[in-house]
Image (cartoon, rainbow, N blue to C red; front, top):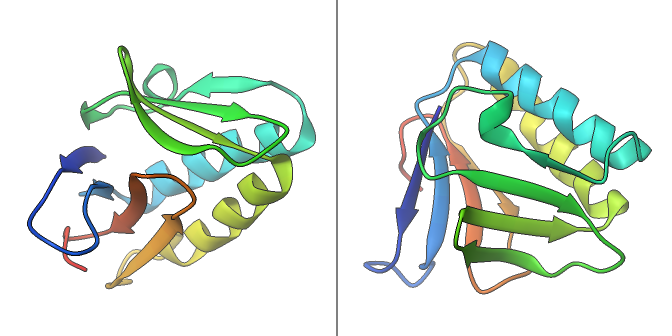
Length: 121
């Protein structure tokens, strides 16, 4: 899975795009998010569980939706368990091997989070 930061060039920018992934990677990402939703872990460094190319991601369960922020160690996304549950559900169609298109996963912060198999939106 490639993580690409796109700072400008579209009215939707800045954005972080998850792209070039396979169904197994999406399945693994959904499992990590289920752990955040259930409270099994308060946060997860995604690159410790999935092979990522590009930026690092740190997902955090919080008491309010902060959104996606650039941080020293990569990008940090803080959402409530309910919002993580929503993101987990939005990822489900991308487990299918031939699904094209894109989905905005989070738009609560200054930086938006997008998933797109080929990087288009």
